[in-house]
Length: 410
Image (cartoon, rainbow, N blue to C red; front, top):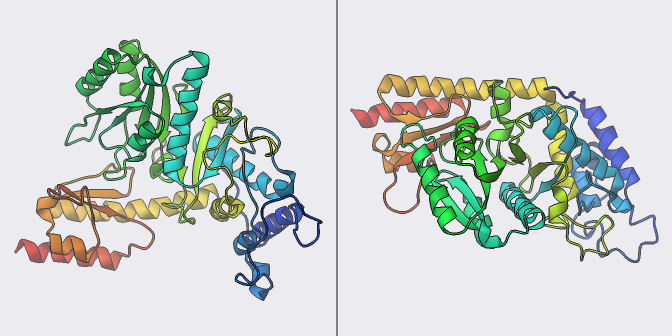
């Protein structure tokens, strides 16, 4: 896993060079494009600081990244910044998820939710095209700890969903519940399955054991494809667990979701969908005739500036710098957990993640509110309170929380 760190000067040169290759609405006789730069009456385009602000300059230039630039020709008006997005997809697929020399498709989505829906939509299209399957013959399997975008996708795409149970202590998918899901699905007439594997669930940071789960499915002799929801864990887990099986070296895996606005601290609207070659075509919208290269994405038009923002962060750190940042966050999480252990507080934590879910009986509602801990439910019956050790979480705040735990326990 390696990608080079760039200096601020190199990043500016790369971004401004890309913008120079894009369409300049002020210089070209543009009549046909239903878009423009940001309204100059509201967003100033001549501020002197913009010469040192590549992301803000890209926002003002307003490049449209409609389509999938890893797949075929795209709108020539924005080919400069399209290249930056292509480079970003290449780094994520080949470096973070160990794709090596294989080529991949992908794009910067509006977030992890869209990227997960895109993945399920693509695989639905695969089964419909290659197996002439009807929607009611395709089922989506995910755990009870999975993100809500999975049931949302199933409802949007008219697919049946089957939810596996997890062990309450380990948060691992149970074999019995998976077998029950398959039995129920087959009774419903389902012949093909889309399996969603979690690389860090939102509440617990738990990571599904893909080896066990796919072995169980193979024993049941069912047809399935795997999508990995790495929206939260994708920028942590591959860097903290070098033995991870959740990579493109695993032939079972078809696609990944990443989300930059979580650990990467990029703007909202920076999810990433990654797929093996040969599958993006199942999302083709043939009717998008006016779009060069047509469209293969759910969202259509999207901000090129957001792709640039992710690329800038990843290039600023480089792979080694990013590993160092993640290690600092995990060390801080380790210290928190050591203190909880000393106090006899019960919690769940994956050792490779920065999420700590504490059992509710150890934290009062007042303390949870004071430190803005996230509950597993906003209705009655909270069982867990979640801490996420992010960049803004200072040791002093953690120490204050631990002190309050002591005071409440007296």
